[in-house]
Amino acid sequence: MRTLRIDYLKHKFGYNHKNLLLNLVLTIFLFGLASKFVFFPSLSPEISPDLEHPFAEKTNADPEPQNPPVFSQVTENQTTLSEQVPQLAPVLEHVFQNEDQVSPSNKKCDYFSGDWVPNPVGPVYTNESCNLIESPQNCLKNGRPDKEFLYWKWAPRDCDLPPFDPYKFLNAMRNKAWALIGDSISRNHVQSLLCMLSTVEQPVLVYHDEEYKSKSWHFPSYNFNISVIWSPFLVEAAIFEDFNGVSSSEVQLYLDKLDSKWKDQFLNFDYIIISCGKWFLKSAIYYENDTILGCHYCNKKNLTELGFNFAYRKALKFVLNFIASSNHKGLIFFRTFTPDHFENGEWFSGGTCNRKAPVTEGKIEMKYLNKMLRDIELEEFGKAAAKASKSGVNLKLVDLALLSLLRPDGHPGPYREFHPFADKGKNAKVQNDCLHWCLPGPIDSWNDILMEMVVNG
Ligand SMILES: *[C@@H]1O[C@H](CO)[C@@H](O)[C@H](O)[C@H]1NC(C)=O
Ligand SMILES: *[C@@H]1O[C@H](CO)[C@@H](O)[C@H](O)[C@H]1NC(C)=O
Ligand SMILES: *[C@@H]1O[C@H](CO)[C@@H](O)[C@H](O)[C@H]1NC(C)=O
Ligand SMILES: *[C@@H]1O[C@H](CO)[C@@H](O)[C@H](O)[C@H]1NC(C)=O
Ligand SMILES: *[C@@H]1O[C@H](CO)[C@@H](O)[C@H](O)[C@H]1NC(C)=O
Image 1 (cartoon, rainbow, N blue to C red):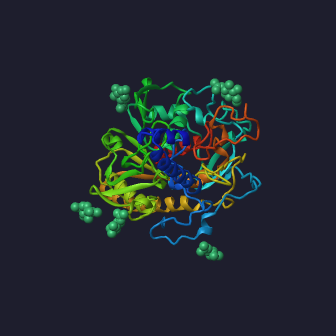
Image 2 (cartoon, rainbow, N blue to C red; image 1 turned 180 degrees about the vertical axis):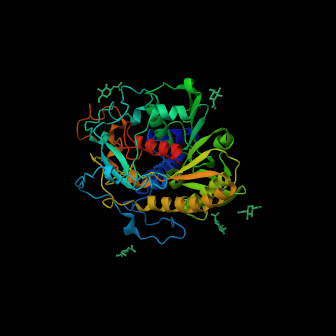
Image 3 (cartoon, helix red, strand yellow; image 1 turned 90 degrees about the vertical axis):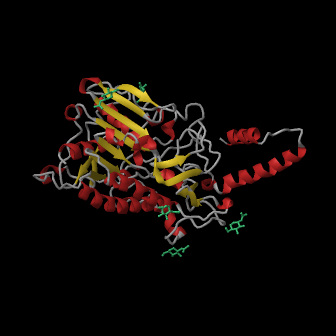
C-alpha cells in the first residue's frame, strides 16, 4: 500500500534520481508522510486496498498529541474511547426458546430486542449452494475452521420470528423492485438475501457498474428485481481513491446535495433499504452551497475542524428529509449502521476478532464512536419519521445495530483471504476484517426480520 503511494508520488512529482535537490526534498516529504502514517494512521485518508473502506476510525490507541478537536459539541474523554469488548468469552447463555411466550399478535413486536438462540438447523444456503458470495466474505471457502457461528438465529423477546421463507417472499414480490442503498455492508447484505432467494430461483445479473460496486439482478419467474447501489455517503462525494483504494486527497463532501446515483432512481423502487455510516469517519472537506464549511482531519489545510458528527447529522438530516417529503409510494427502511468488532487494535493496527460464539446483551459495549453515529441516526430518524407520517411516506427503522453488536463471532477476521495461514504459518500477521460479515452468517437473520416487517407490518 505504501509502495503504491510512493509510486504515485514519484509519478506526480516527476521523481528523478538525477535531481538531488528534489530528491532531498522528496525524502524529507516522504519521511514526514511515513511518520504521519505511523503515528497518525487515522489521519491518513488512505485505506486498505482490499478492505474497501469505511474503516478510517480514530482510537484511543493512537498517540495524537497535536490532533485537532475531533468532535463538535462533545466533550471528549479519552478513557471512554477505550471501550473494548470484554477480553474473555462470556459463558453462553442458552436462552429458553420462546414457544410459551409467543404473543398472539406480531403487530407491536419489537423485532430488535431479543437474543441469539441456538439454531441446530443451520443456514439455508452454503458456500456450495450459493455462487453469489464475494470472496472476502466467503469464510468457509477461505478456510475458517470453526463453524459454531452458523448455528444461531435471532429471537425477538416478545414475538415469534419465523425463518425467512424464500417462496413466500418471491411470491409477495412479483413485479416489484428492491434497492439496497449504502456502503459495502449493503453489498454484504444483498448477497445474503440473494443467496437465500437463490434456493428457489437463480437470479440473473442484469447490470453492474465498472467496479461492480452497484449491481442489479432479475428473478425471471417473478419479474422481481433487486439492486444494490453503492453510495457510501448518500450525499454527493468526490472520492479520490484509485482502484486499489489508495487515496490521494480528502473526500469532498457536499452536505446539501444528494448522490444522484440513488436519487435519480429513487421512485423506481417499491422497497428501499438505505443506510450509511463509517465512511463519515474519513478525513473530508465539507461543503454547503459549494462553499467550504470546514473539514474533518485536515488540520494542514487551515480549515475549521467540524468533526464527523457535524457532517453525519447534516447529511442524514438532508437525506431523511428528502425521503420524508418525497412522493415515494412504497416502503423505505432506514437501516442503522452496524458496529465493527476489532479487538486489541483497529483494522490498521493489528486488531482481530477471533471469538467463536455470540455474547449476551450487557456483556459487550458499543465503542464510543459507534455510539455517536448511532445516537445521531436515532435522533434524525425520529424527526424524519414524524414528518413522513404526516406526508404519507412509509418510512421505517430497521435497527440492526444492537443485535449485530452481539455477534463478534460473525466476521471474516483473517479469513477474508483464501487460506491466509497456508504458507505463512499459524502465527503470520494477517490483516483482519471485523466489520463485514461471513456468509452464511449472522446477517442472514436480518432477512427474517425484514420479511416479517414487509409481510406483517
Ligand atoms: C474521563 O472520565 C473518567 C471517569 O469520569 C475520569 O476518571 C478520567 O480522569 C477522565 N479522563 C479524562 C482524560 O478526562
Ligand atoms: C466450501 O467450503 C468448504 C469448507 O467448509 C470447502 O472445502 C469447499 O471447497 C468450499 N466450496 C466452494 C465451492 O467454495
Ligand atoms: C426488472 O428489470 C428488467 C430489466 O432487467 C425490466 O425489464 C423489468 O421491467 C423490471 N421489473 C420491475 C418490476 O421493475
Ligand atoms: C446556503 O444557502 C441557503 C439558502 O440560500 C442559506 O440559508 C444558507 O445559509 C447557505 N449556507 C451557507 C454556508 O452559505
Ligand atoms: C489561515 O486562515 C486565517 C484566517 O482565515 C488567515 O488569517 C491565515 O492567513 C490563513 N493561513 C494560511 C497559511 O492560509
